[in-house]
Image (tube, rainbow, N blue to C red; front, side):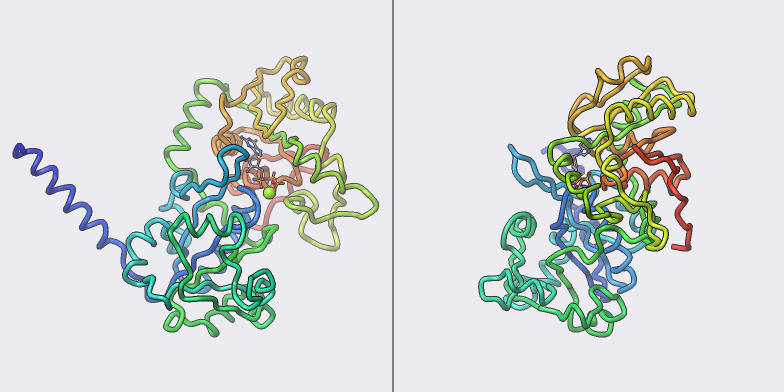
Length: 383
Ligand SMILES: Nc1nc2c(ncn2[C@@H]2O[C@H](COP(=O)(O)OP(=O)(O)OP(=O)(O)O)[C@@H](O)[C@H]2O)c(=O)[nH]1
Ligand SMILES: [Mg+2]
């Protein structure tokens, strides 16, 4: 080995030593959880609720990877930091990625010793377990694959909590009932955050910033293929969505359905009725709205994000330049939507709602299909 190679090796080793000693154990404890319900949009909504709850508990949040489902490739996991910026998240509260927690801290502080690795679940969940008493933490998908992905077996058993007594996930109750001295690591079977998101948690979106990798991909695409000002539209129209919207607008009047509060509002007395058209707008009304918003914002380029049908044929007569990202890359579609000068989304979709919250905190305009009022400004309460 040459001298210079030797020094590189020494530096690398030193770097590792320094890096591992960087992660200090937090005596206030940790919370882990599985984002086991729904896809990306749902997971983000629950993440923001969990973030507030865990901050109020004054524990460090162990940030789980995102779970994605694919017919061909099965269930997959993407670390938070590959899409988003951990430093930005840390501006709100102490956060550590799951991978780092498992690699650096778990071997010493949360060992697989037959007692430490416990899973916490509400009493109602035990019904699904084989013995009817323990947490069914690894039964079914994504439950099993999620914890397996991080090599976690709950060899310490289950800690079943009284959901009513804890007011669900009330931080004060948890601080009193489960102090870090006795419960240093709380691993929840599911997300300790509500779905749909609570109004007061919407603003936390500002701490969820895209990683530099995703930003670079989005910005270089915008520079190459779009011209500012540009309009971005989200068309949620795959078969699963058509089925989801089937019951809307029937005999039962819906206000709350997935992301719908972003249009219908949060105040129970003033809620706007959710219509079928808001969930699944007609093609004619979509084209008409694109024309109108484009004229209003003086745009010539429209970025189209969709899970299925980009409606290119229907938009052709508008004379607008239609642009799509060349591959199916949901998080990049999302980034390009958040950066647009104007945006039109789907009231019910939580995929839309991510873009809407991100744009809200930046003060950018949002519009919705089949819904005429511009989004009511969220209360900018102190975070
Ligand atoms: N590439 C791409 N994928 C999308 C788009 N919209 C939806 N999807 C995919 O469809 C999934 C929709 O699930 P969610 O993220 O939960 O959002 P949602 O619209 O509330 O839909 P559901 O909750 O699944 O009914 C996303 O996670 C993406 O994988 C889009 O504009 N572009
Ligand atoms: Mg969803």
